[in-house]
Length: 209
Picture 1 (cartoon, one colour):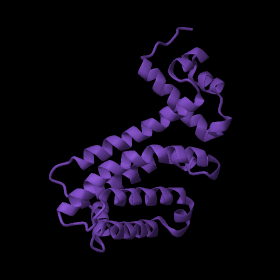
Picture 2 (cartoon, helix red, strand yellow; picture 1 turned 90 degrees about the vertical axis):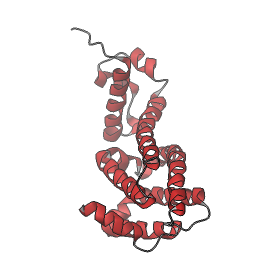
Picture 3 (cartoon, one colour; picture 1 turned 120 degrees about the vertical axis):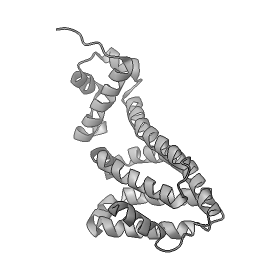
Picture 4 (tube, helix red, strand yellow; picture 1 turned 180 degrees about the vertical axis):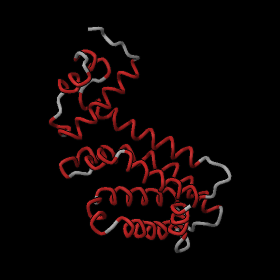
């Protein structure tokens, strides 16, 4: 059989992709390195060339998710000619699409048995989210759209709220996603001192437009 030679980055990403599928199917704790390399048709030595351990691979997988979010958040915060409300609506839309695109793995992370993995994601996610979001809130203050004295702390409150809504995703599936979105936006408006309906109206226009 002819040996298939792949670029290092391509091989590394392939191992991450295969591991993600196995984590979802079997659970992280029940997936072995042996199963990952068998699925990828590579030797164990190849795996350990890229990753120190299964835990190291998981970190790499989570870092890929975080890096995508970080890039979008930073680019959105730096956009010119777009007010703070519109930037936040774009972020909301991004997270909605992101969850849909990665629904199986995100749902897996939210399972009660994976609380330790969820905590790992939260620790990585919070600093990535807070700083660019605080910049957007500061822009909104200057534009007279928000009334808050502590934008960084407000950004932290928003990300904490977002994480909690994510953790209780089964609850909002039961009560209805539309109600949950409206409730979250209402709470968010109060945190940043926006006029009632600011985000909900913009979100609806964006959704229908």
